[in-house]
Image (cartoon, rainbow, N blue to C red):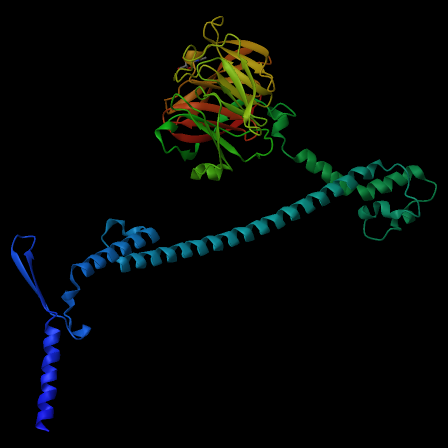
Length: 481
Ligand SMILES: *[C@@H]1O[C@H](CO)[C@@H](O)[C@H](O)[C@H]1NC(C)=O
């Protein structure tokens, strides 16, 4: 028995010896130049290996893995670029962002639904108003036709005026009117039918009619008597917006509607960008929906918008351009005969404001000067299609003395100063009579550098560009002096 145990033990030893034969020793220099000995013995089980035994390969793998992790996080969220926060923090931030976005989205949806409800409400009101308007119109029609009825209503057709009958039924009239007395018939008819009509007539005459009293009948035109305080719509965000021009087409053409607002920032030598905004709110927010690149650069702030075209002076030339907004191309170009340009006859503020285009109730105009006029303001009425000059007027005010000018109802108005906070419109010239005269209508230059003033005949407002600020003024027109 003992010998068996010894034998077992020996074989055990032998096995161990065989195992130890795989041991090895390695010697080498480490990075510090010290001699390093490594003694390696194979282990029967993996678990007995100390963790460090993973060695440099494992470390390399680990660092590469974490590098990959960082890259993945950056690709996924981009927030960990600073290298500060770990992956967990990044994921957390992303989740927070996601949550915020979701909140913003649902908030926007709620607002949208609210707006929709308000819009529906307004639609209903509009419909209601339209219905009432139609009723009123019909009523007025009935009342108007009433006294003109010359023949007595036939016995069989009392409905014709039943609406105007006093209470008592459709036969009241026939009781009152002896048959055959046509003449007297009209009187009771008048008597019964008249109250409504007379009320209407009274209403009509009692309505205050200032327009008839001090405005030119029919057009709503008249001489400028007052300008309101400026209303600010937007401050330009870049230096290019120190001066510029903004416009609304008084007679828009598809695809653009009446609320579309256009703007050109005119600081710079190659001004070609025309920004379009859906409406005044979008302009105020600074979100254009359209950016058009004009084929030729714009000179200064004299551009205007009319019947689906942008009219402007081509840079360094007396060439007028008509740029069609629907085809996005030049539809007409023509030299304005003898017109000074590029600093020859600017307004007092300079800025190459030699040729100023304007639109009013009567159409398209150019305000400029020529050598022949010796710097006095010349007004030209233009054919809006071809740009040809239809007629010109030579005023007796020097262009260099005016800070700006605009047309209202065929009259030119000039501004005394572009910097004074309290200035005036101090001269007007009427193309209908070819007469000019001094006047004094106060105007406020709120921001102290008013580079553009144009009249919009539909809004009945002055549009202006005052030192980065897009502003408008209400105007009041009155009786001719
Ligand atoms: C208007 O004001 C300008 C600037 O003060 C001045 O030069 C000009 O003579 C004035 N015009 C009239 C008609 O008073």
